[in-house]
Image (cartoon, rainbow, N blue to C red; front, side, top):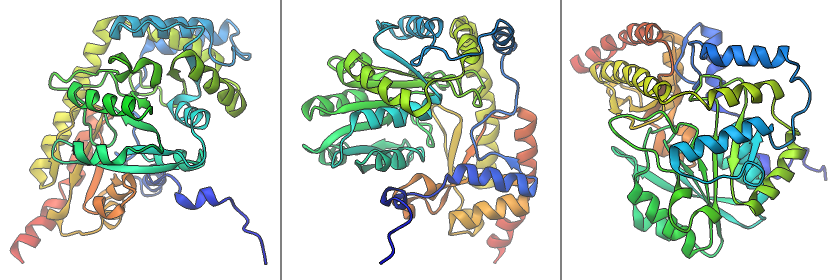
Length: 395
């Protein structure tokens, strides 16, 4: 008998569909509204800080869990925005992006046989990360149009085997911003079952229509059982820098730092120095960030609705989920490939965000973290769908 050539854990997931769609976009010359990276420049002050750090020779290993300057800036930012008292020496781990933060946290906190609750749809890393960590994901659906959860379904998902819940707010792919009421309900269950809340808050500053970001770690009884994850990528338009951080109580931080050390050793030293500069940007920066993204959101959402998509208007982040059945397609992958090949716009098939793919078969996700001229060109290309819809109506 021939032994299997790969580990069992990798049989539970596929390669990234998001990044696969980016490759298709390159191949067909399509506008990439699939992967969530901006096509506009990062702030000049941030780029200059990075160049200056390189010139000043911050080019060797930083302290494994983050440069002192960056950790101090992170702690000050969380005090300023959320009133959190974070100790840079005991509570912060800087990693190679929020992506590494998540896998380092799960490897540090989970044991084989543990269960992790994940809201569905979900950012595609959470399920694979859970399997890689030896645990089992348990999925709880979010329901449109508001993408909220059924409290009874979430209550049933918790059990003595529950080790953690992964919470992403503002949420990718739906744009849902979890309310204080929802967070308090989750917090009560975490405390009842002695479970961790592992929170991906990478879109914390991209909010619309008066919605407010609340870190669950700030709720009563949650600091000691929460790992708060965020990073530079989204708020500062530097997705390629790979600078993220975990904030957690001292005992959890110690475990996360050990895993991080042997995963990547450390994040890029000069970019850590530059990131410390960005975290000191004034409130006006974040006000402009929200206003700019709100214009992009309205541009794309209004156009998609006019074309005939069913659109769930996001409350935060920079994605919009849609239903495309008005155009006569029943399969999300077939529709996404039609768009990239024939229309010249790349999107993400909705099923890739679900453990139960059938729940996303009529959905695709658009990213609007692009220049307004890019979005207008994408809308112009998508307008060719009108003819298809008209033909279906005439049939």
